Length: 357
Image (cartoon, rainbow, N blue to C red):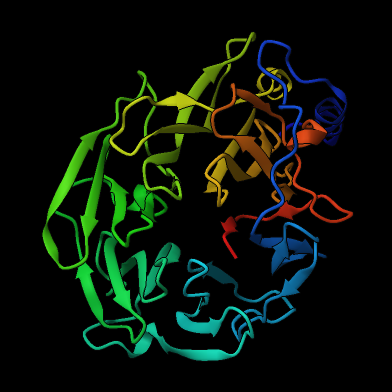
């Protein structure tokens, strides 16, 4: 491992250098202050889930589960329905799923994975996602921890398995975040370089090719579908080589039609991160209620040869969905990209969801 001196120089370079002029800078207008953001924000050495009003900056702190005490044992993951249902779901690392009224935060039922019949130490892999109507959960899991592969599953609010498995074979573990709901209640998954759209209770499904550039792949992709159900935001693994001949892997944001057409990159690493061989992920995209913007929760940066260097709670960024390609730095991004509905820039330690509430 390189010395602390190297890490300090790297941090200084990332914090002080300007972004590359070879890519577009942020649009002059700010992201619309509509709806709210569900985000896991840093609090001390841990994170705290909040719903932040994009108009006023007012925040509601969401309750921690027993699996996530303040001393840092365990964690929670939250997901939200559309405004018409206004339901929140909390899934703990111990496998307890609970539902809450989105207006009052009153509990409204739940279940424990361990209580489901025919399972053995079941566990979610990736973030479970609540359907727009608040009735179903979409996730990858192992119903039996001894099984080799993850499996796609749809559960109802009582924990009953509604659907499971996939008609296509693919690397399920590396696709555990590559699922999303459509506004009409259908759901989407990737299966390698294919997009699959399915409907609960219907054995038929739609498949479209995702024509990714050479050497780019869908492993560990994140997905989000636009509010009109016509467009897809997806992160793809992209290897890039810097001037020193060092190859670095990035998870970059792309947009496309729901049928896979018109795929184009929306983010790229800044020249500074590329020059210093710093890997980043521009992950967990979420569409604004008006369909014109995307927010992302970047992860990283992590430097080659300095694996202990990194800051995983970075600023939440908003990008025009039809804008030019943006250089994302993680530490010194243009002010017009930063999401700051109140007096402070929002940060995320992993996840963000733009709500139409």
